[in-house]
Length: 232
Length: 104
Image 1: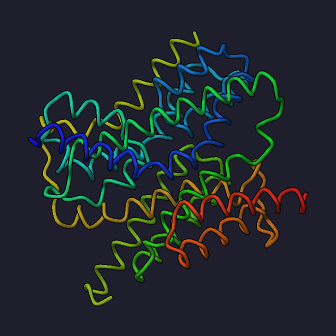
Image 2: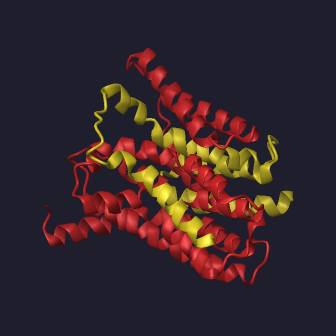
């Protein structure tokens, strides 16, 4: 257990590390807030989505489905399928997180987003610091909620915020995170298969498109690595 | 009804996130499983981007003038050249919005 000053330092390091991604999520957060208002949710409900659900893609899809008159069950099923990549993240972080005390597990579990995973998943048991992870997760949570609030305020004043292409921000962020990782053939194969399948499956309107494509890409990368026997 | 939906969605997402963090779940990861999960970041993040880039407004757009595609290529080039994630994100967003207004 680190002493309080060390804990504070690790927390700050985490908060600083996630800062660029927190800035970049601004347009996506604006979109989540303004879309909620456009779908006739109250400001509190729009904010509640970000505070309680805390999953951008699922929030946007749920709002779209609400507008289209979908029922509760189909929205929940879609949410389950759309956010099932988090099962993988949990599985992947199980070695470092499952041994923590309950309140840490629950807290960091709640904060386990794509961005959190991208920043902390490469840490092994020695490198992993719970305060660093908390700094990452909490900063991102606060940023997401502040940008949602801004979106709610703007959405009430500027119509059609959803047609500005704000969703590119998530692409810019993820592309900048992925590109430096693509250094060997198995990762190239993984990214190529995942990209092709995600577009194809989404074109077919599969609700499981993203997680199915991601899994196929991961499997392709894994098989490629096995065949090359670590020579690459 | 809306509040019920919000809390139920929160529960569903939390369940996905927390399920495998529960130590009472009897499960040990083999070295193969760990290697497989090592591809989770590139595999999943790519899958999230794919449809946003090539299916804007749910219409297939494979044109080389697709601003999402051009913006992504700029982001890749910038991050490989500068190694700065923040700079690449901000610059590629700026270029994306410029391209969008020119090509629209």
